[in-house]
Length: 231
Image (tube, rainbow, N blue to C red; front, side, top):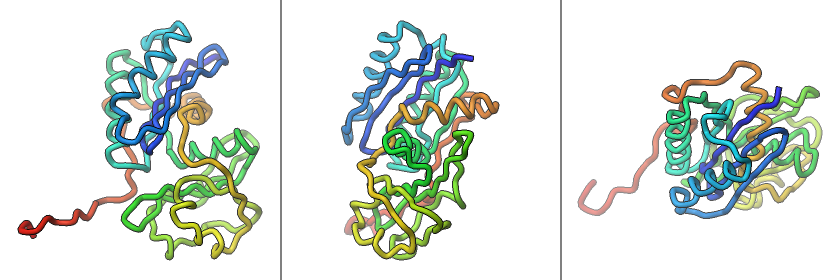
């Protein structure tokens, strides 16, 4: 069955949209920190217009559910929910860490990926992913938020491709890990790499109504530095 799925992601500094339609992928992407609200909807309009389809003709709408920037994740899910409500289509949340694993496979045919996003505040969002023969990504252990000095991989067998902004943010981290690593240029998730993940989820019945879509923050709370006189 040919699926029409629109994917949007604003969880990191990158802003991206992708549409699979009639086995063709149409994508837009731009690294644009703090401009997601201005960029994302025009990108959506562009890919739909290029494909010649409307929102109501979609089978599902996928979105980057995080982890990532709190503001970015909220923008992405809010816009995706608005589009899904208006078109009455189900939603599929896709991990940004898993999307970077899929991107590593698309670019390098990597089947074992250690994805890490710089979470600021001296922490990382980390997920270790392995691709099955069926083309499904499985998380080894759990996605987590952790201080770099406290991070240990869940699995050390074989070679692991490094993806995400966490590695350049902490350049000494990979060297101290007890595993074989391969560097890559993958820094940010891309909406186009969420499409195959979303297809598997759709066929497995793993969709939700727009009002039930939820983000993944991993970090339960943020410690804000108080301003003088407001302690």
